[in-house]
Image (cartoon, rainbow, N blue to C red; front, side, top):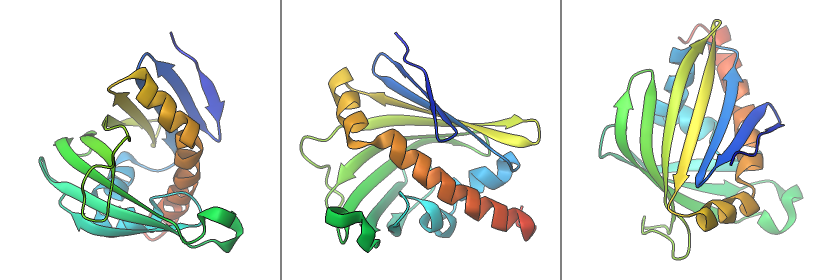
Length: 179
């Protein structure tokens, strides 16, 4: 069963225990791929608005680890202000500039998986689309309950917010000829 929604320029659907999010970026595919494959670029936009990301470790290769911390720097976010959210990705497959596959998890500061939080297999596909890039992000959860848990935490709204931040970075880099 699929529940399709369009929100903040992201099309989402739930297919069993998979969450599929699609978004079109108004720049070439290579530039979008580099935003996910370069540590400095990734730190400049990853996370919701008002949050800042620090990459503790970043090895963009199969079996490589990306360990990061997002910190809320926006005082207007109330109880979230000052909070940290640690995460880790372990890359499974990388096909430049077409696909990135990784396991994604919430962690502690040392990179240990957080108890009670789902581990997700994420497949990101970067498709050339009329001089733009269509990003298809499929997140497979071990259970429907794990998917529901992150949906209730606001995963779609968080992705929409960070993709707006990515738009700003991509526009700036494209204007500078950073392809």
